[in-house]
Image 1 (cartoon, rainbow, N blue to C red):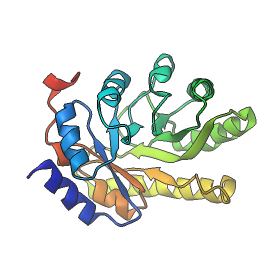
Image 2 (spheres, one colour):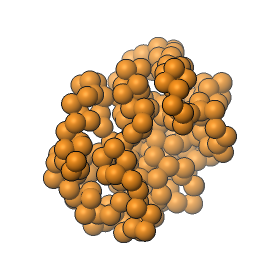
Image 3 (cartoon, rainbow, N blue to C red):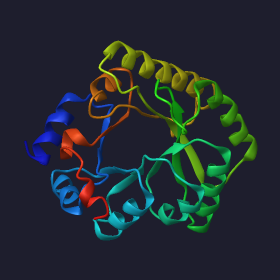
Amino acid sequence: MTISESIQQINASLPSSTKLIAVSKTHPAEAIEEAYAAGMRDFGENKVQELAAKAEILPKDIRWHMIGHLQTNKVKYIAPFVHLIHSVDSLHLLQTISKEAVKNNRTINYLLEVHIAQEESKFGLSPVQVVPLIQEIMDANLPNVRLCGLMCMATNTDDADEIRNEFRAVSTLFKYIKSSYFADDEHFAQLSMGMSHDYKIAAEEGSTYVRVGTAIFGARDYGTANQ
């Protein structure tokens, strides 16, 4: 199946409320150009260096999503153009994003990353840490950044019930935060959940962004990671 056919098939399986992000990490610019020709405009990368290099040579109307862990010292490289940062997990990181957004005279949209999976992870907030951080963010009153929702990754398992329960837990948290803090804020509307193996479940549980790589581009070719 071609990249174009894969995109069409995935989009056909998604509700209108769920948008597809093509996760292009480790894939060459030629593959992204093929997806772009098929109508894709939202692409996700997890490494700053690779994201910045691709953004420099690919069409300027691409909406780039930073979906991997973001270090504070690398924010400046994507601040001029990034569409949405999915992986904010600390006030310190957000303060840096705010500072770089001001320098670039633009507002940067971001999501808070929730760690819901069973696997150990150094990154992401536990569900009980999310609301206290939002209160800290509000008190800090940081300029030029906008909280648009939450992101998570489910446990890498074949147990569909476990995956569904994890997505449902984050969706419930999202709805609580929306009603309690952002009821009148149209920007707080994004729930980034689901990847190649579980995006259909994520969409059923309310995801507005699914991050799909392998099901579009095939297995990752790590030999072209820097292209």
